[in-house]
Image 1 (cartoon, helix red, strand yellow):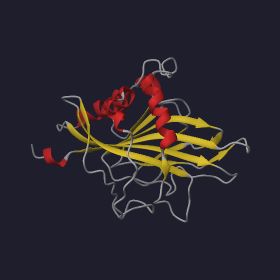
Image 2 (cartoon, rainbow, N blue to C red):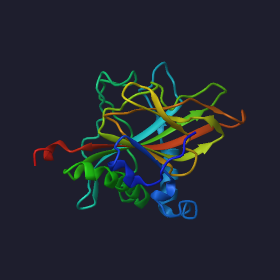
Image 3 (spheres, one colour):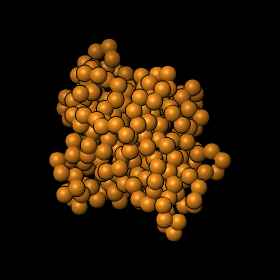
Image 4 (tube, one colour):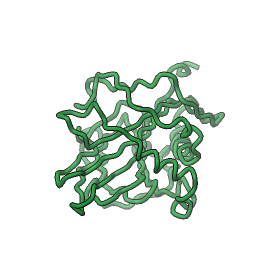
Length: 245
């Protein structure tokens, strides 16, 4: 495994990817993990529903999604009316070319300070590369569950791009699992970095235009309990209505 500079601001100097520790978004994430906003996020994962767009009747991935508009200038963060999720045909084998609708996150999460700190910290790292200040921000709460001794795949389509400008992947929980390393690959799909997200709010920020990413399969350790991997994936796209402004 590699070691990474924890300074998120490095991203604008080399906009490929950067790996950062959880305290980038919370000065002492472990000490404050019992706060209301942290508990709200953890409880939200217990409300995620089976991803009906998985193939072959697979049920190991569960998800909720809400799209927001964020403004780095005014620091506003509001839910969008249009919650359709769409990825182009050429991106991956799961759901590409389909207008997908997922259960939305609880409305109260729009005011969740942990979620806002996470979103704006990544946007602030990206912002020096762009003059536009308004972004569409898609927040995915994704749980991968191992209920048998078979492996579950956090990235069922393998190394891929999601069709966004940028994205971040943040760990919330690993419980009773092994595996699940994250791979970052260049445009030719050569692995340039691999690491394990294993602590609360550890995050990787990725340029989705120039890099690929993958999360390797997981397997439960104790056969008498389910294995769980909870992550928040956030995609960041420049709002089209301001690109010529």
